[in-house]
Amino acid sequence: MSLDAGRAIALSLQVAAWCTAVSLPLAIALGWWLARREFRGKSVVSALVFAPMVLPPVVTGMLLLSLLGTRGLLGPWLAALGIEIPFTAAAAIIAALVVGLPLFVMSTRAAFAAIDPAYEELAASLGDAPWRVLWRVSLPLALPGIAGGAALTFARALGEFGATIVLAGNTDETRTIAIAIYTLLDRPDGRGDAAALAWASIAISVLALGGYELLVRWQRRRLELTR
Image 1: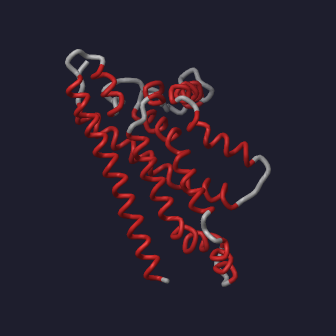
Image 2: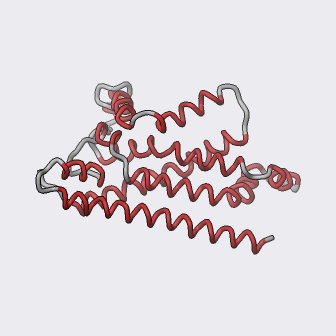
């Protein structure tokens, strides 16, 4: 079985980017909803959203496979539509999304909860519609938390292993950095390449978190100038 390190890095970056992009609107909506609204069953919704954080990733992968697999709960309907998810690149994205989304939601919920409601109430009293209040007031104030959630989600998706190997498998089309490292460590002569991939993963994660820090500093300076 051949192993292309460059392809593994490229695939991991694609998976992490797609996971972060798809998670962004979901995390903003769920974070705002959990921070700003009280409703019956809120604890149940929170438990479902954050469950992947406490479940072993392999268990999360098994649950996804039982849902999306050919013999899973949704398998027959997906097959009827010509959609095949397990052991594809899409499966790697879905696995990373399910595992990474709770981190994003936790960050956005904390960001929205930290906003003084008086700012939103003032904007609403001036005639702004709820969506304009969210767009012009809440989102700018929550931006550092949203950016932090995005960086954490990207880094988490980049290092995802357990759920991915169960749902996506270990093929040339689905072999991310983490799976490639696992595969190389199983070879007598693979430790050097595994170490190189590990350092590449560390470097990418540090760059992502460094970008978040720069964005937070820029946002703070911008807010200070507007005061």
